[in-house]
Length: 486
Image (tube, rainbow, N blue to C red; front, top):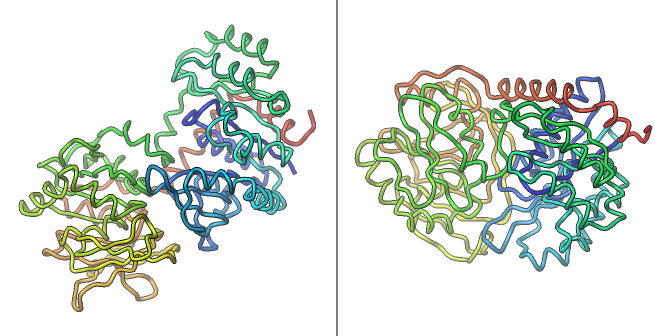
């Protein structure tokens, strides 16, 4: 069995995409490959076959390996629900809420569970590609680290360091990392990758030689800017700030809530040429010409209801409804559309009950036990098929006789519609990834869908990235490094 870990000089240097591309490239070589990330922090989560939660980046990497996602691929997941607190997910299940200081005291205890998950996973694979978190240069965090060198040294996994040349200062970031980390940690790093290069890579030959001379690490290659990465789900909400409206036709507006979750729900719409998708940042009103407003999922429904009102978006939504516009709520957004949201046990923050937007005849109680499962079915009254997944802690009750929105394959229902079908909500994420479901939505907006299945788009992007990595990286050296045959 072989294993290799990609760590970065900082966050958002492209580790997740590179790991996914390497997983697909190795799988294309006939290897049994698995992804692994010891600790992740993201409100973009995926459901596994065991009914657990992992980061969506690891779910994407599992797709790259052509296997189903497993909780062993991401044993520790932190889901921020305020500026100070996060929900702690261990081996796919919630273990309450943790603050930064509390988590630091627990991290060394979690290392044992991280290593156990890694060993279970590695027993099923020829090769494991491990992704670090943040940067090993955060030496103030090193004593209790389980995400970078703490894991690499405990598991004996060699490391390749990734630097992002697009943000500038890549020589300083790579050489600086070598300068500040512990010599024993530096000894775990055997090479480096320069990522996101634009132009002729030969222009950076002198830079590569300077890095090699200063660090003693081997250059594994220079990866160009990868346009195909834009077709993959983004892991971090920072990507929303870079989202662009590339389509034409009716406008779909999505307010960027402070704890927005599973925002890759909108990726399929963002790539539809027949509509315009606009992610509306705080401080801006919701567009008055929107044909559809979608309230997205959130990790903290009550807190984001207050955030929505503070932005004046509740007023914008009410005006949108009066004009006859369509409105859709997904998961936490669905809960917001009801009359009340109660969190009696303080699962997502302070305990209490607040008024919702009162646009659907529902009431929600936040419970500690989560619903996590894959689902499929049809839109009620249409026969149009959908599939997706649920991750939510809310129990929502509708008034008797309220019109159902979705019918699951087992005959049960989810979601409610009102206002002649112009307002709807449900708990299903990934609702528009399948072409039939997206076509149903766009037909309501008098727009035509491109008919593409989101799964096919992602798979083609992974193939494109893997082919590029085969060309620009020393893949044989990476495999030899991971298998100890150098």
